[in-house]
Length: 139
Ligand code: ADP
Ligand code: MG
Image (cartoon, rainbow, N blue to C red; front, top):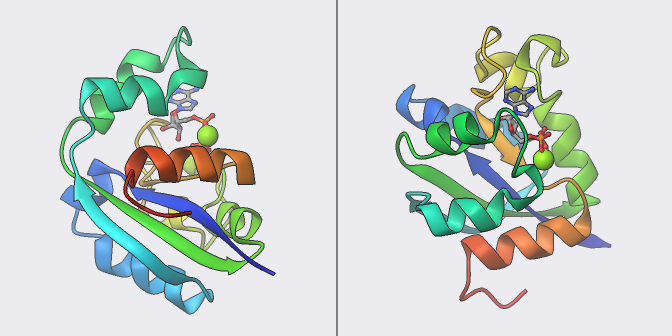
Protein backbone atom coordinates (compact mmCIF):
# COMPACT_ATOMS: atom_id res chain seq x y z
CA UNK A 1 0.00 0.00 0.00
CA UNK A 2 1.15 3.52 -0.69
CA UNK A 3 2.15 5.65 2.26
CA UNK A 4 3.40 9.17 2.91
CA UNK A 5 6.49 10.83 4.27
CA UNK A 6 7.90 14.33 4.70
CA UNK A 7 10.93 15.69 2.90
CA UNK A 8 12.50 19.06 3.72
CA UNK A 9 14.99 20.64 1.35
CA UNK A 10 17.21 22.52 3.80
CA UNK A 11 18.50 26.11 3.36
CA UNK A 12 21.96 25.00 2.15
CA UNK A 13 20.45 23.15 -0.83
CA UNK A 14 17.93 25.92 -1.52
CA UNK A 15 20.68 28.57 -1.51
CA UNK A 16 22.92 26.43 -3.71
CA UNK A 17 20.18 26.17 -6.34
CA UNK A 18 19.69 22.42 -5.96
CA UNK A 19 15.89 22.29 -5.53
CA UNK A 20 15.25 21.18 -9.10
CA UNK A 21 17.85 18.43 -9.14
CA UNK A 22 16.66 17.03 -5.81
CA UNK A 23 13.04 16.96 -6.96
CA UNK A 24 14.12 15.26 -10.20
CA UNK A 25 15.85 12.48 -8.23
CA UNK A 26 12.76 12.04 -6.06
CA UNK A 27 10.37 11.82 -9.00
CA UNK A 28 12.69 9.48 -10.91
CA UNK A 29 12.70 7.22 -7.83
CA UNK A 30 8.91 6.82 -8.06
CA UNK A 31 7.61 9.36 -5.51
CA UNK A 32 4.71 11.68 -6.29
CA UNK A 33 4.37 15.11 -4.69
CA UNK A 34 1.16 15.51 -2.68
CA UNK A 35 1.90 18.99 -1.29
CA UNK A 36 4.75 21.49 -1.53
CA UNK A 37 5.45 24.70 0.38
CA UNK A 38 8.17 27.28 0.99
CA UNK A 39 8.63 28.53 4.55
CA UNK A 40 11.04 29.88 7.12
CA UNK A 41 11.50 27.74 10.23
CA UNK A 42 10.60 30.13 13.06
CA UNK A 43 11.72 29.44 16.66
CA UNK A 44 8.45 27.87 17.79
CA UNK A 45 8.31 25.47 14.84
CA UNK A 46 12.01 24.58 15.20
CA UNK A 47 11.52 23.72 18.88
CA UNK A 48 8.63 21.38 18.06
CA UNK A 49 10.16 19.87 14.93
CA UNK A 50 13.51 19.11 16.57
CA UNK A 51 12.26 18.38 20.11
CA UNK A 52 13.97 14.94 20.08
CA UNK A 53 17.36 16.65 19.69
CA UNK A 54 16.96 19.26 22.44
CA UNK A 55 19.97 19.09 24.76
CA UNK A 56 22.31 17.49 22.21
CA UNK A 57 25.57 19.33 21.54
CA UNK A 58 24.62 20.08 17.92
CA UNK A 59 21.07 21.35 18.67
CA UNK A 60 21.81 25.10 18.57
CA UNK A 61 23.89 24.75 15.41
CA UNK A 62 21.12 22.72 13.78
CA UNK A 63 18.39 25.27 14.54
CA UNK A 64 20.57 28.20 13.46
CA UNK A 65 21.39 26.38 10.22
CA UNK A 66 17.71 25.62 9.52
CA UNK A 67 16.91 29.31 10.01
CA UNK A 68 19.57 30.48 7.57
CA UNK A 69 17.05 30.77 4.74
CA UNK A 70 13.95 29.31 3.17
CA UNK A 71 13.08 25.64 3.48
CA UNK A 72 11.01 23.61 0.99
CA UNK A 73 8.53 21.14 2.48
CA UNK A 74 7.16 18.23 0.43
CA UNK A 75 4.66 15.54 1.30
CA UNK A 76 5.71 12.54 -0.78
CA UNK A 77 3.76 9.40 -1.61
CA UNK A 78 5.03 5.97 -2.62
CA UNK A 79 5.01 2.31 -1.57
CA UNK A 80 6.89 2.14 1.75
CA UNK A 81 7.56 5.87 1.47
CA UNK A 82 9.52 6.34 4.72
CA UNK A 83 12.08 3.60 4.11
CA UNK A 84 12.46 4.28 0.41
CA UNK A 85 13.09 7.99 1.01
CA UNK A 86 15.59 7.35 3.82
CA UNK A 87 17.46 5.08 1.42
CA UNK A 88 17.43 7.71 -1.33
CA UNK A 89 18.77 10.49 0.94
CA UNK A 90 21.60 8.41 2.48
CA UNK A 91 23.52 8.67 5.76
CA UNK A 92 23.11 11.68 8.08
CA UNK A 93 26.84 12.37 7.61
CA UNK A 94 27.08 13.31 3.92
CA UNK A 95 30.69 12.06 3.74
CA UNK A 96 29.39 8.57 4.64
CA UNK A 97 26.32 8.66 2.38
CA UNK A 98 26.35 6.07 -0.41
CA UNK A 99 27.28 7.17 -3.91
CA UNK A 100 24.32 8.64 -5.80
CA UNK A 101 22.26 9.44 -2.71
CA UNK A 102 20.96 12.99 -2.25
CA UNK A 103 23.23 13.73 0.71
CA UNK A 104 26.24 12.28 -1.10
CA UNK A 105 25.52 14.54 -4.07
CA UNK A 106 24.37 17.75 -2.36
CA UNK A 107 25.44 17.64 1.32
CA UNK A 108 28.60 19.25 2.66
CA UNK A 109 31.08 16.39 3.27
CA UNK A 110 32.94 18.47 5.92
CA UNK A 111 29.95 19.74 7.98
CA UNK A 112 27.48 17.09 9.25
CA UNK A 113 24.71 19.63 9.92
CA UNK A 114 24.75 20.86 6.34
CA UNK A 115 23.26 17.77 4.71
CA UNK A 116 20.79 19.20 2.16
CA UNK A 117 17.62 17.37 3.22
CA UNK A 118 15.52 15.98 6.06
CA UNK A 119 13.32 12.88 5.76
CA UNK A 120 11.03 11.40 8.42
CA UNK A 121 12.51 8.36 10.16
CA UNK A 122 9.33 6.27 10.74
CA UNK A 123 5.60 6.43 9.87
CA UNK A 124 4.73 8.00 13.26
CA UNK A 125 7.34 10.74 12.72
CA UNK A 126 6.02 11.30 9.19
CA UNK A 127 2.51 11.90 10.52
CA UNK A 128 3.73 14.22 13.29
CA UNK A 129 6.08 16.18 11.03
CA UNK A 130 3.54 16.53 8.20
CA UNK A 131 1.13 17.96 10.80
CA UNK A 132 3.72 20.54 11.86
CA UNK A 133 4.74 21.65 8.35
CA UNK A 134 1.30 21.35 6.70
CA UNK A 135 -1.19 22.10 9.51
CA UNK A 136 -4.12 22.35 7.06
CA UNK A 137 -3.41 19.03 5.35
CA UNK A 138 -5.87 16.20 5.91
CA UNK A 139 -3.57 13.23 6.46
P1 ADP B 1 18.68 12.47 10.22
O1 ADP B 1 18.44 13.85 9.62
O2 ADP B 1 19.51 11.60 9.31
O3 ADP B 1 17.41 11.79 10.67
P2 ADP B 1 19.20 13.08 13.01
O4 ADP B 1 17.72 13.02 13.20
O5 ADP B 1 20.05 12.26 13.91
O6 ADP B 1 19.59 12.69 11.51
O7 ADP B 1 19.70 14.58 13.15
C1 ADP B 1 18.94 15.67 12.66
C2 ADP B 1 19.86 16.63 11.95
O8 ADP B 1 20.79 17.18 12.88
C3 ADP B 1 20.74 16.00 10.88
O9 ADP B 1 20.08 15.88 9.63
C4 ADP B 1 21.90 16.97 10.80
O10 ADP B 1 21.54 18.15 10.07
C5 ADP B 1 22.06 17.35 12.27
N1 ADP B 1 23.03 16.48 12.96
C6 ADP B 1 22.84 15.20 13.37
N2 ADP B 1 23.92 14.70 13.99
C7 ADP B 1 24.83 15.70 14.01
C8 ADP B 1 26.15 15.83 14.51
N3 ADP B 1 26.77 14.81 15.15
N4 ADP B 1 26.79 17.01 14.35
C9 ADP B 1 26.19 18.03 13.73
N5 ADP B 1 24.94 18.00 13.22
C10 ADP B 1 24.25 16.84 13.34
MG1 MG C 1 16.05 12.45 12.11
